[in-house]
Image (cartoon, rainbow, N blue to C red; front, side):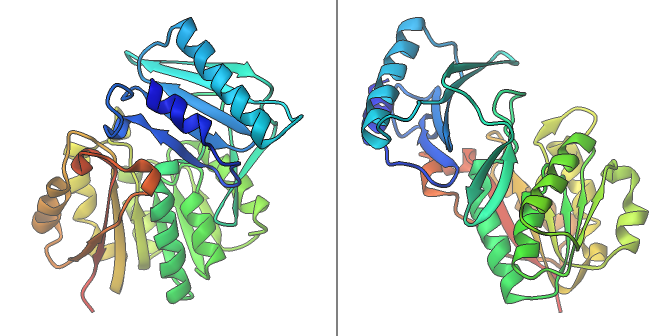
Length: 306
């Protein structure tokens, strides 16, 4: 645990939400089960194996000492989440969590929820994907964008801020899309976004009729029974891409399954949509550096002919 404590001792005062310590990346031997994230003004410590009372006390002391240096007189707020054997337990360890809780990333505002569920409303490892979408939409103003598995619609927010004409957000969760609508309102985006709480595989007709799209973003769960199983469903989705994209349009394909490598997506695409040209794999945020890059998040960009 020493590497985590050393990182805490040298923390900077955070402004944007982001990862601070990424033990799962394998670059800190012995600390693989720890992650520390900043959702200002709250720190979130995630353990992927139960922590002892002594370990949590040591982390609390380290956070308190550094916070006293960074923000004298201000309360320390931190949350501990344990994910183990399919269960998630979240506890407020010190201070409080704002309600509503709004964080920033690269100038955008997002609502997060740290005490409910495993996911917090903003996937920090996708920051570079959002940065790419922002830059791409700025370079191609007026794009129509399809955002599949939209969750809380962060991609939609940055696309519209950068000049996209319209974004169609689709997700099975009405609750996630409701937060997505709040995110658009937080950023003053009153027009241009549609929110569809549909099962993608039962909605191809509606999605296709609303197209074609200059950019299609696909960010599915790697395994979610009843929604999406990458090994089975990615191929079904890929074969639809040529009909969804404009000539020269782009597709961003995301995969966060440690057991599946980049080659899985590339081989599937070669079979299902061979006319789409592979352009690049986006780098992950530096804070998510991984000693085994193929186990980390994979974000691939493809372009349609034209």
